[in-house]
Image (cartoon, rainbow, N blue to C red; front, side, top):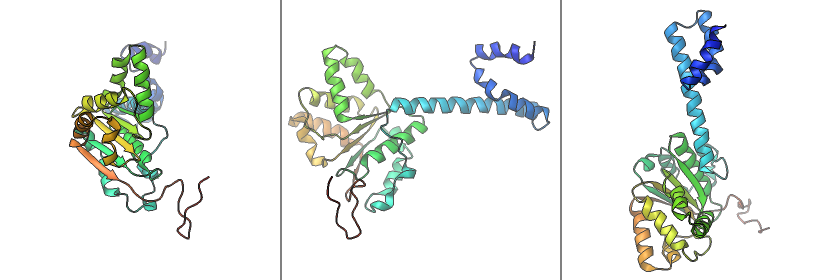
Length: 252
């Protein structure tokens, strides 16, 4: 029996079967005299660590449910010089997540809010944080449906547990029924326990009326903005850029 045949069940028992993927390569390196015994073992274990890290990152990215694979590297900051690039790059270090701070990205449609929020979410996944991206409408619909089948508490954990929750397009439509309470409960539950990024076409002054109750709005906004980075983006839409004469294309 070849030694590798005896090694396989041992590696599986130790949950190190991934080592087999690079075992032959590293063995050949050692045989050729390029690796000492210690270096051989080190390289083999580093290969396994890198495989596991890559697998965990892939899992975090899939669970984040991003709509698109967005990064800051493919974001065109030159399109709109009013975008605070230095501030966004600083947020990309993910220090705000460790401090349980929030980010509010506000501005008209098409200026890059969703791209930036998902790019920050991608950086958070790389940094090892759990992330969930969801539209405000979809999140509140899911919670409304969960009330009907008595799974509301369990569904709420989906939005309160991640290190970073990204809520896209808040205020795109009016909130109805218990949606205001659900939104408040999420903000309250995440206060100083997790970070939240919210994108919205509405100015911050337009957010309180969404709750349809002054006390509820005050309590929610106080928690949301207590540790928050506010980024207001103005300018042209990436989807409808100005022409050479400065005019805009007619809407299709």
